[in-house]
Length: 501
Image (cartoon, rainbow, N blue to C red; front, side, top):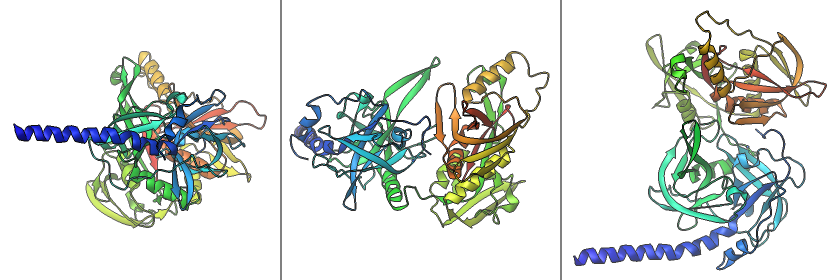
């Protein structure tokens, strides 16, 4: 009994020490947190301490009434220079105009900043101060050690754009979570530290004030056709991944270094009218991801030339079941390193090895041209500034007599939900300027603007997982942009998830 009392006493004492130290830790961290404010936006996104100091944060309300959007961020230091880390989705729509993108420090000093670079896939962006940051701005650091299950954590940010320097606490609920959606799919910590709109880009810190992750996503459950927020399920991109991405962005002209393979990997699903009544009408046609194409002149050209149509079993020894898992393993491949694929074709298993390249602007241009030529029967050119698209309408296969009535109506409703837009009536389209591309559904959209050919290649890499996506073109008369659908499957009865890597 005496031992139990001593143990309880030590436990209570330990919790008391942690509770007493938390405010002191937060006093040191809070000076590194900023509110990111966007005053001018573009229509489409761009393809990215001392004790008592905290009192300054709450002396008066931060007025963001004339901003278009806002989010959170935090300051780190690299090579003696301060940078701001935030989510890409916070700043993707920011205009390049002077004064469009600013941050507010703890004492509400306003600093104009610019985007150094970022990565839409991981939803991370790095910003740079355009003037010297004041002494009120401190720096915090990514933790080298991995987060531990059950570890106490704190989320800081500006929820709803109205409550800057809000602190919530919780624990690490799980690690290495994979998320759905187009961007931000891998490497998330799950935590009970509540975050909400506006918290995006803020830090998740440990009990010592080290950054464990970037608060990026919240969870919803679909109940009766309604999306219900789950406040105890929140996600932060892991610090180890963040640290690597920031290093690449600062050392590689604003870009994350990636391997270049030159593969088109896909998986098809058939439409099922019975399952459509329950909201999910697609059933697997391909039980495994399929090697659909090889981009000419890419690292995979010689090694995999005879394997188009093969099912992919493993990537670098790791079993894969779908295109998402193939993407996850490709993301682990370093540039200029060996990659192995175990495939099966006509019942014969083989392991093929080849050396990856490093993704470049030219590779992204090659992807853009390949996808347009292969899946829209169009061609891309450039006039030195704009990307010009000449597109010939591909006729949809005719409906068979049995595909009529309610079945067609339900399918069309579902396809609209998936982002499929009505086919254009004309059989041929003149040359038009591409201004944007991406995915648009009845509930959300992810549209990125196109300034150059490589932007389009990046958009295709992001959008292919959605199955059907759009190009937005403008004619020479300045009319409203028009959407041209690209459906890699070639049929509205087939949903194809596609990866170009």
